[in-house]
Image 1 (cartoon, rainbow, N blue to C red):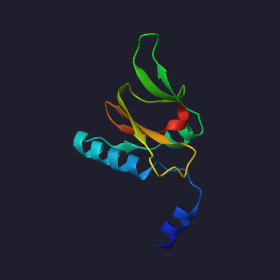
Image 2 (cartoon, rainbow, N blue to C red):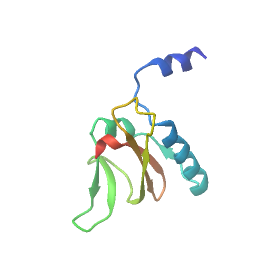
Image 3 (cartoon, one colour):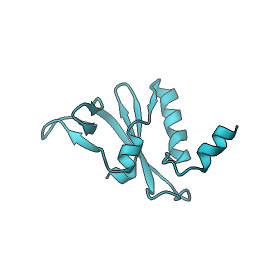
Image 4 (tube, rainbow, N blue to C red):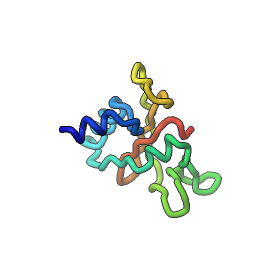
Amino acid sequence: MSAISAASNSNQIVPLSKTLMQAAKMAIDLDKPICLDYYVASYNKECKIARNGTEGEKFLYKNPEEYTSPLLGMFKIDSNVESNQNSSYDLIFETQNSIYIASGNML
C-alpha cells in the first residue's frame, strides 16, 4: 500500500482518469491492448502525428525506429475539472492492433 501512496504523491505525468476509463471501455469493446508508451513523450512534445507521404496514412511518430501502425481513429477527451496538469485534454488513438493514449500537449 505504501508504494501506491508514494507513486500518487509524486509529480509523475499520467493521463486523466476520464481518459483511462474511456480507453478501458474501448479496449474491452475492441479487444485491443492499451499502450501508454507515447504519453510522456507527447506531454513533452517529443512525438507527433505524421503522414506517410502527402496523401498517406497517419501514424504516431517518435523517431525512425518508434512509430505506430496507421491510425484508424482519434478521440479527444476533455479534462473538465481535472486541470491539475498543463494539458487540458488527452487523446486516444486507435490503430489496427492497439489503443494509444497521448497528451493533448503534442498538438
